[in-house]
Length: 247
Image 1 (cartoon, helix red, strand yellow):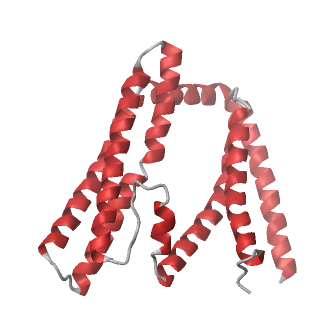
Image 2 (cartoon, one colour):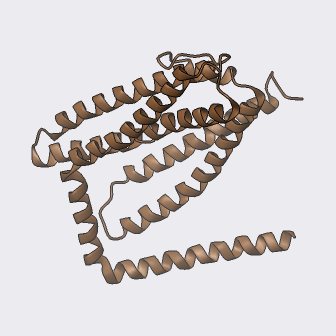
Image 3 (cartoon, helix red, strand yellow):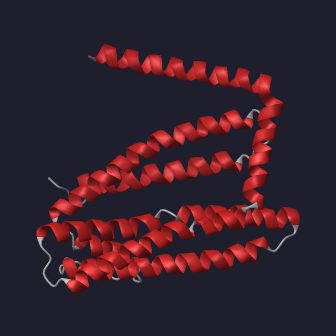
């Protein structure tokens, strides 16, 4: 069994090395065209930052519609049956998740806007900053309302979205099954990101061979990866070997 695992690991390393060599060969033969593609893509992102920022309104509207739908169901029914309860709970969960995933998008677009302002001496960043404030405020309202509606079907839930200790209070009010779901989801997120970061480094190394990249790109990725690992390992070690050890 150990030999098979070792062989698979060795083959995967050889495969990665061959893939890297192939990318280098492709980069050498297609450097001018790839450089043009990257430059054109960068120009499109930078020059259309406001349009990209406004696209973020779409999932926020979807979240608002889902919240309104759940709100109407809860208001019309004092006692929800099992099917209505499950459906309403799912609607509230989606109404909270969909607007939240747009947060990285709008901050990324703000970065494009800042580059556009610096490069072309435009006031784009001020317009996009206003859009960002409006969208984040809208998202916060959705989150607040969703939590308040969730409390109506789960009276034991505690916490206020506007309180900085909200996540801690909300988690402490979850039952064991919900905490297990959170734990499994966090572990899957940890595993996923440990696969994503090496891929990102490989992509950046490939791009670096054909395009002049700042070393801060690699520094930023390395710091984020390190934070992600430490934020998992340190609490894990404390829970296992600290004063509140499970044993």
